[in-house]
Image (cartoon, rainbow over all chains, first blue to last red; front, side, top):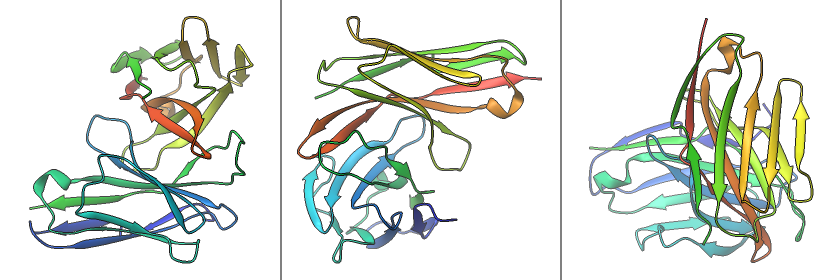
Length: 116
Length: 114
């Protein structure tokens, strides 16, 4: 599968623990996005990277959330001091660009987080 | 910001019938409208998209229409099959900050009854 990949696919953690998710975009894509999806809802935008630069963050991304894309390839999303309300599917997507183009986002399979 | 409303939230149709899902958007700057299909436990997959300079687009049994004046767009699936059963998300997208900012609807759960 040469699409977007995410790891792990499932994560169960106790409240207060830190968790980290990884996303590997499609190799030639320079744009990367993180979304959160809760049951019965569409994906909600969290943050966006153009290469290694994090250019936009949603107000949904509290101080406990941090995302990185250090070399402009894979990205990590870390949640510190997890809360039960953080339980959701975390989706990563990537797109080709370039700037100004109507480019399509392709999604990974997601990481389902359950906070006990 | 953009607001996308989608309805119905659930839709049951008999196999072979047509299914229509409707969405509205609020921001006239939106210029790209993708539709995604998400099967249970799987990733959202793009099934069709339409750009604001086009009123209709068709791909085999799937078609999408766009009315920019009314800010409405719809997905039409003809001759539905059981494998069409999934959650369908509409989305509206506009260019902001160097990328296409996408806002999704809440999804429509389509059940095709054999």
